[in-house]
Each structure stands twice: as C-alpha cells, then as structure tokens.
Image (tube, rainbow, N blue to C red; front, side, top):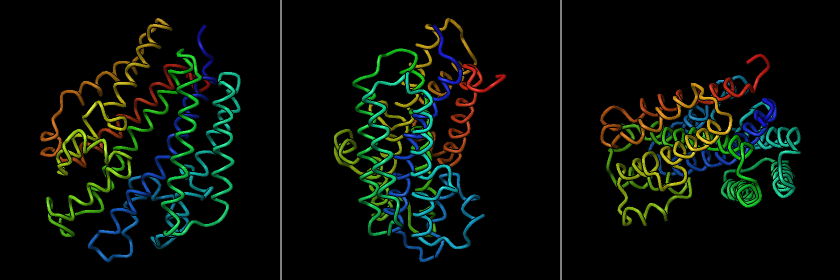
Length: 317
C-alpha cells in the first residue's frame, strides 16, 4: 500500500534536515580550516561560507559585518536561520514526531536524544576555539542516528524516502563544500598547485572525514585534481556526488517498481547519474569547476522538487 504524501514528505524532510545539521557543521569546518591558511587579511573572509550555504541574504538582513564568531553563531544556533544546526535538528525532530509510527523506537530515540544533546550544547555562544569540539559532537550525533536507521529499519518505501532526503542533501553539501574552496582561494591569494593550495585541498578532505580514505585510494599523493575526482566522481567515496546519485537512483528504482508508476523524477535522477558517470575530472576543471557545481546544485534542487510533486508531498500536487 502506498504511503500517504504527508508521511513521505515527513520522512524525506526529516532526513534532509538531519543531514543538513551535520553538513552545516562540516561547512563551518571547511571554512575555518581554509581561512586559517588564507593569505588574505580581509575582514569578510567568512562571507564565502554564507554564500555557499545559501544563507547570505538572511545573514545580511540581520548583521553588517562578517565577524567570525557572529557567522559561527548564525550557522550553529540562530533560529532566524532555518539551516542552522539548531534549527535543522528542531525541524527534523518535528517531522519525526509527525511520522513517529513509521519509525522504529531506536531511530526515534536516537533523533530525540541528538536534539536534546545539541540543544543543550548550543544554549551558550560557541567561540572559534570551541568550534572543532562542537563540530565533532554534531557529527557523532549524526552517526548515532544513521546507525539506528541502518540497523533497525525495514528496507521498504519508508527506507527509500528517508534515503532520498539524506542523499539529495548530502550531494548538495559536498558540492557546496567544494565551492567554499573555490571562493576562499582565488588566484590572487595563492598560486594553484602551490604547497598552500594543496594544504587547503587536504583541509577539505578532513572536513568531510575523507582524509584517510583518500590516502588509501590515491597512495597519499595530495593533488587538487585527484581530490576533486574523489569528492565528485569516485563511487566508492560515501560523500561523493557519484555515490550519492547511485543510491538516489537505486531508491527511486525501488519506488518505481513498488508503486508501478514511472515519474519525471526518475528520468532526472538517471540523467544526473549518467552525467557524473560519463564525466572526467579534467573535463570538469577545463569547463569550470564553479560552473559545474552551480549547475549540479540547481539540478539537484530540481530533482527534490520533482520528487515532492511525483509523490504528492504537498496538497494539490
């Protein structure tokens, strides 16, 4: 029996916001790691983090300066920012309560516990010195939720809608983290291929917990072209764009067979997956990394909208 649209919607967005909470923390991690080695002394070096997160307009409506601790507070705690870690987990928990009967007890308790732990830690401002410990806490709570999800949930359409939300959000975040590197290290700040450039690319790997995995895959040779390939096109890397779209297409395929209806979103997902499978890292770089990432983020958002329309997430859709 097909899920009601509002249940599918709640599951999809519950997992998008669970993933977004951790991804926002990782975006801050990437920004901090790169800014520590940035040769620019301009006071707005944290602005690219806001640009890449898509929250610059909301930030500018409230603040005038790009002070590091103000940006950190806005990204972690600010209730006026719907993508902050606190707001994301609160929204995820609200969606979880609406679809409580579709979740195992272990998964619901993991979500609720994570919300309580993070709310308590973010009740006070977080300094730049405290940021790494807070980021680690957010990542640990995300791992707790994923562990409960993977080990207790039946592999049915409930599982598929949760997966779709998580991997669409993760793909979006990996693209945005790569875009932070583009914005924070412009040619006038450092020469491409320099020791500093390579150090900052390694920082990107650390921010997505892929430093050791990359070393295994590429024998520890840190080159920008290989790191871009790893995070975009390597299907064995669990945060890569290619891996995310392999699992997105797989979940949509299960829904296609289960519901026996083929929607436009299935074609969109397959087209994006095939584009990634057929691309080479050299083609992407030669055509413009930033332009490719912009187009990917736009197409990824379009797919999310098509999934909502296809499975009637919204009234009248």
